[in-house]
Image (cartoon, rainbow, N blue to C red):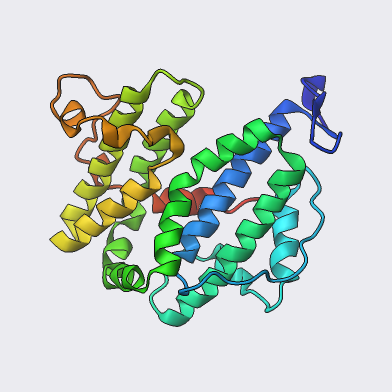
Length: 271
């Protein structure tokens, strides 16, 4: 039910209505769940898995219920408890399980978006998860990258509790700048600061090669479509100090990464 009868004439593609605040909450949950499913998948099999069965009909505003139905009615049965664990995959078997989870989750979320979210907001969501999808392509289709991830898994264990601060700051900047088209340099600074935050964390707790690998992961995750021109802006612009970045990681923040934030915010409740 709409609170205070505010903005209740927002229509879904099928003609239904959702109040604006509920819709915004729903979109935020979609993003969180989608990225969370991706991260918990981590790495998977060499080829993309086929469809795991018919998708339930979505009820707009109730994505958590739809996802629950998606996972429990899939074939083969998916280990739904993986949704509520924070364990980083450390074996081929766990990688395969999480790949099934990822593929089914992506199918369900996309179906929900197609039915309940208009084209403009779908584009925003797709921009948000662009980096995660790129990383997924590497992890799920490249056996060499899989082995590289598993080789550095100890580093993820060491730093994942500190990932929160970097992620929270980075996502906050993205939210502030998402609708602005003239802030490329600000976004590039944010991305550069985020990567440094991750790299500094890993350097304190991991081997040099593992720290470098985690930085590449952070770079992929921070690459949404708003950042596609970042690589065209010279590295020195962000590192020279001639322009003020929106934030600079302190020693405390520099021991942080994004995974903990994703895991902490992704235990959704019913909408």
